[in-house]
Image 1 (cartoon, each protein chain N blue to C red):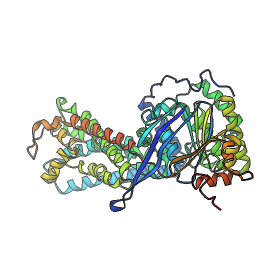
Image 2: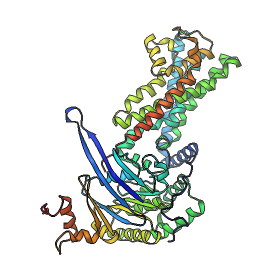
Image 3: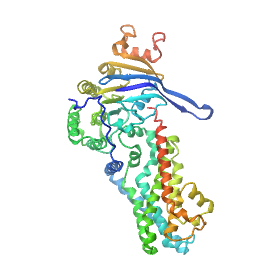
Image 4: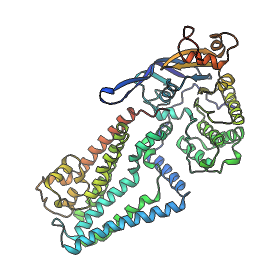
Amino acid sequence: MIEVDRAGRSFTVGRGSARRTVHAVRDLSFTVGAGEFVGYLGPNGAGKSTTIKMLTGILAPTSGRLRVAGLDPTRRRTALARRIGVVFGQRTTLWWDLPLKDSFQLIRHLYKVDRMDFRRRLDELADLLDLGAFMDTPVRQLSLGQRMRGDVTAALLHDPAVLVLDEPTIGLDVVSKVAMRDFLRRLNAERGTTVLLTTHDLGDIEKLCRRVMLIDHGRLGFDGTLDDLRATAPDGESLEEVVARLYTGPPPEAPASP
Amino acid sequence: MTRDGRGPAAPRAPRAEPPVVRTYLLLAWTWLRASAQYPVSLVMMVLGSFAVNALDVAAIWIIFRHTDSLGGFGLAEVMFLYGTAGMSFALADMLFGNVDRLSHHIRSGSFDTMLIRPASAFVQTATDRFSVHRFGRLAQSAVVLGIALPRLDLPWERAWAVPLMIACGVVIFAAIFTLGGALQFLLTDAPEVANAFTYGGSSLTQYPFSVYGEQLVKGVTFIVPLAFVNWQPALYVLDRPDPLGLPYGLRFAAPLAALLLALAAALAWRAGIRRYRSTGS
């Protein structure tokens, strides 16, 4: 479903003599099969967002190749957009000044979703994510938790085969977080939607992901199951400590950060 | 939850993209409704736009109270030049002017959210915050042109070129807006460069080119083709000799100039999207 083959993305920064090349992602390779739920971890600036942006066609890779749902993201951006859903936790894709339901209608037109399919999916999602109370409220007046549920709904109305979530639980309260996780788990289990999730909340990973990939300094540092990840560290270490150790360098030589 | 008949891995036949015009109208209508959420701001913008444009016309009246002709052209002819350039610019600005807000979208990250939708990023940028105040300048230019045309008493064998010259002007201004937008992929802080040619070009084309220096006129004929917005075609419509004695054929070159510039703009926009760097979040 997702194939990344030696993909790299570099940026040229600075001017004149201070000019240098920064490799946000280098030589990255992985595949994600249909129906997988994969957690994508990494410290700030490790290349997570760059990877997500390459997978969704926002950024063109400077080397290597990517395929998502059988398409080259950069060349077939609009075709790919119909087959994937994307949620950015830090910014909304909804129309700020319009009632939530108007944003959904607009998405129906943009994605050319059949009217009946749309009705059915929206009813289902509105029920599962409990949107009923604020369907008529302009997006700017929604709480963060409500808006995030709206964003997730918007990303799923066209029934995408792949869902890419960039920090979907950031800033959510405990209740919203639990509800969101529960929803995502059901989506993956019952509907078979492939999910790629980036997060800094290891609770999301523990509750949702069978497989974890870890990126640091633009390279893949770990790719395996959650149990494999735990096994890299002595017993009794919390997942936070395990991950923090991996962030600072390849185990076991690197000293654990305090 | 049950999955629809098709499996997640089965590649669906790529559906045809919705017609660009339909997408444009849909998004423009959505933004119009969103702007109605702030009625006071809406009314203020319409009034402000009207006042600014009325002052522009007043300036021309004042000039003609002191002189009978401007660069060898009478009042009706100057109003014709003003009206056609104004219509072209107003239409291009109304339809595509917001492309020059691209650097704002890049900095705020909202350009990323445009790229994940199955619609042209260009159309999404152009329709962003579409609002009724965009009609103000168009109405004013139409009024000026409406006054000028009956006074000129154009013969039909020349008048046919008027809609064509306005259309070419729209394409030229739209292409300049787009080039300005494309430039912002490289220089996120340089929308002003583009404004020099769009808003500057709009002011320039309001008056007969015979009032300007020869070097400037040649520059906007052969380098930035603003002369084809209205000046060269108008020489044909008004049946005037070229004050600079440039080749007669140039007055029919507006469609070619518009086409070439539009092509350059489209290529630049594509190249810009390929080079898009997003922001660091």
